[in-house]
Length: 178
Image 1: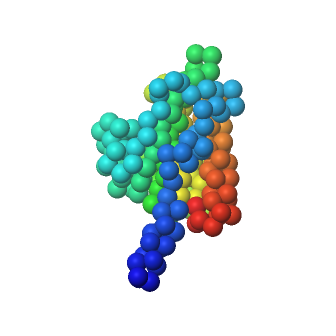
Image 2: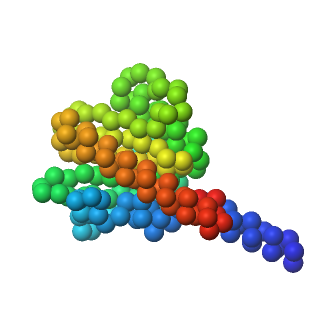
């Protein structure tokens, strides 16, 4: 009986480390600044269900350590941004995936500094920002290839970083490892 109780407690503690759909919705809420989520344009996926978000090529994400993700499209005055919050299996997996995206976008090795947590790029009519915060990996794609578009995409991932850090801190206070 003690073994069963210990096993159940260990499983509950481990599960507290993993996000839920509601956690991801807190990180990417209905409104971010003056942008609003487009009705019926939110997609959630866990494990192989990530195929609902990545129609083709999802193996790249699951192999990199994505365990679940939430994609939401926001609108403001006829402009759109696609935001995806990914929970990774670990903080090191998130950082490795950021470095991989950097190499993919720039053709250069990623900076080695611990302070490398975010970058953005523009091309093909869009601006994309990437960021990590702990075990979270974020992308924001604004469908505008301008300096302003890049800045707005970066603004989104900064908000996601802040919200995920606050969520993790709250979970740690509640006794989970967040």
